[in-house]
Image (cartoon, rainbow over the protein chains, first blue to last red):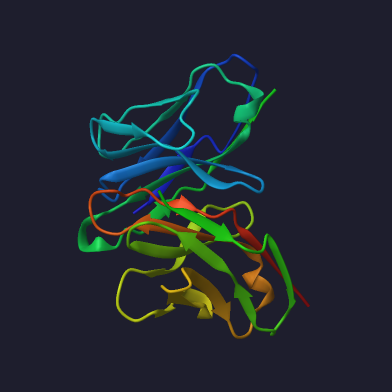
Length: 114
Length: 115
């Protein structure tokens, strides 16, 4: 299993540009989520999904969109990038059955908005 | 809603010394508790978790944590650290039961092990 994969690893955007951060998992996990990590702030939940076709907002959803058309993929879209979105983005997935609730994290995407 | 407080943002220690990273949580319902580790330029990986049962939980790499319900704490310990333990450590909480999968993370503790 590849686990959770994220592309790209690094990205530089200009203010106002849009882009999609890709996330895929091959573990048949129902739950997927996106976090952003900023220094001294820990990880903050942006959006999450409990299954294909079902998404919901997390703690910091503004400026981001998500969709979940398949179990495997959960892309994060930045509609109009702003310098405040400079961050490291992590995708995670979890298999809820058997009550493990362990979240598996991807390697991250480091985004800089200038 | 739940919250997590990691009481130390940085903990420097010498190699082979014991270490304790402190975590307190707040929740109006029962919770599951987790410690994750993040090595430089990597994603997070699970160290250990408390779901139920014994309050002393053992994890990977010689770490353990103790759940204390009365003090709402879940401190992480290791009796003798190595240079390779240098990393950032995150405590996280999740409401137990139901279909709420969301984790709430603390702000992290940077453990630096010096020779």
